[in-house]
Image (tube, rainbow, N blue to C red; front, side, top):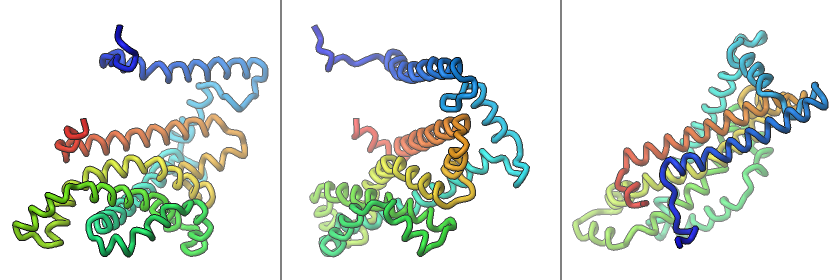
Amino acid sequence: MKRLINLTPSKPLALALGIIPFFLIAVIYLVNSNARLAENPNDKLLPPVSKMVDAMERLALEPSKRTGEYTFWADTANSLQRLGLGVLIAATVGLLFGIFTGSIPLINAGFSPLLTILSLIPPLALLPILFIVFGLGEISKVVLIVVGITPFIARDIQRRAQEIPSEQLVKAQTLGANTSQLLIRVLLPQLMPKLIDSVRLSLGAGWLFLIAAEAIAATDGLGYRIFLVRRYLSMDVILPYVAWITLLAFIFDQLLAFANRKLYPWHAQGGK
């Protein structure tokens, strides 16, 4: 008799098992929504699907009377622009800090303790400071994302750099490689797929910091819209927006995974 821990589902069974939890959540929601609406037709906590569809059609397909923009798409574009810029800067800075502190002992001794301390500071606690220093515009929102996820990326790349076998560095040096050549031709190619993995892991935190910044000081964006309509208990808008954010996060995660497999197939094979 096989033990449960040794049973591996086939691909069709794995797909079915993955769908079942979502199906159960939908059923639980519909049952509770119908029950609440039966008691109170004006209940806003669990709106029917039809009401959410109507709200999203209004926001996505009808231009705003105030701005003329399609609110849903404008919110999405503005949030993605902030998130993309913040993640790009964080990945670049994190890669540089990580590769230098992870491979050069003198830099490690000077900056590794600082990096550790910075990673322990709650980024949201810095939000008032960022607003004071950078104002309430776009810069402060992007900086919050950068401050929030850069230490994680940097420390992960630092650890990955330290895991590279020293034999590779010794062999390269015996062939005449200098420090810059070691960094660019030996370490960097091996760390780039690790960087993509780090970015994937930090995206959830990036979304958190984006939503927090938009909720406090913004005039557009997905986070701004959610916190704007909460005062009216507009769950027919909040729930679809949350679902949309989740879908976007999933799509970006899969795109990064796909890019990693295509650009660095040896890394994907080694991870199996």
